[in-house]
Image (cartoon, rainbow, N blue to C red; front, side, top):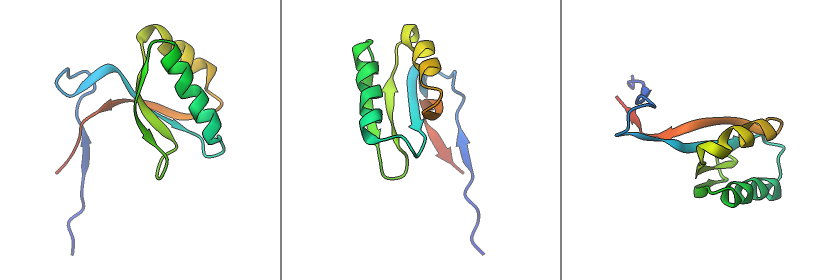
Length: 93
């Protein structure tokens, strides 16, 4: 019988494993690719940067979002975003 893999997220506030302005943004399935691009453009226009784009398993991207824009981005997009979580290192045991 195969042993189960357990995923462990390292503490988000550990500066060695995460940056408090780096996030993974995942959109709801019904959001168009054009809308995802528009939101990515909004982040860039407000001083952020798209670090990685996802499209096969997740609809979204990893981004550096300035603290000054994060709350605004989060509240304006609540109807299209499935979740936002801090980007960091995930390990298995």
